[in-house]
Length: 96
Image 1 (cartoon, rainbow, N blue to C red):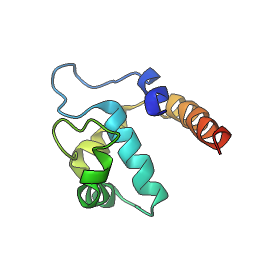
Image 2 (tube, rainbow, N blue to C red; image 1 turned 135 degrees about the vertical axis):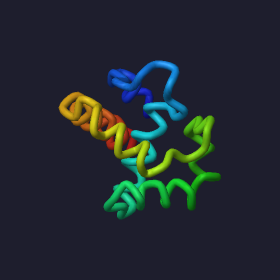
Image 3 (tube, helix red, strand yellow; image 1 turned 120 degrees about the vertical axis):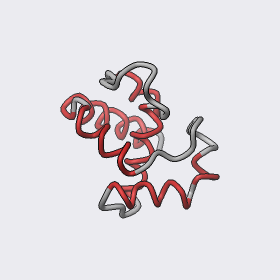
Image 4 (cartoon, helix red, strand yellow; image 1 turned 30 degrees about the vertical axis):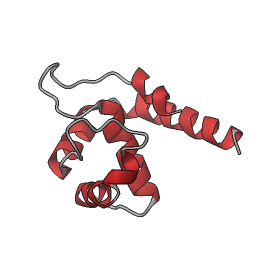
């Protein structure tokens, strides 16, 4: 269901990113829903729940660092992310 975020343009330099865009976005959203309030706490959430997250995220290089998460959110198109986030939550709530 989180494939909706694959429509967000990845502004990072191709070939220089160790972590998948969708993995970072979903990790961040889940961490924030669970109370994370900083990039450090998003990373910590990921490390604490790595085994569970691997069931539905690829995480080929493990959990991204707080610096990586921060850098991504500095460069993505936040308006497009917001539109996709609303679409994603609408799909989730329709299933319940």
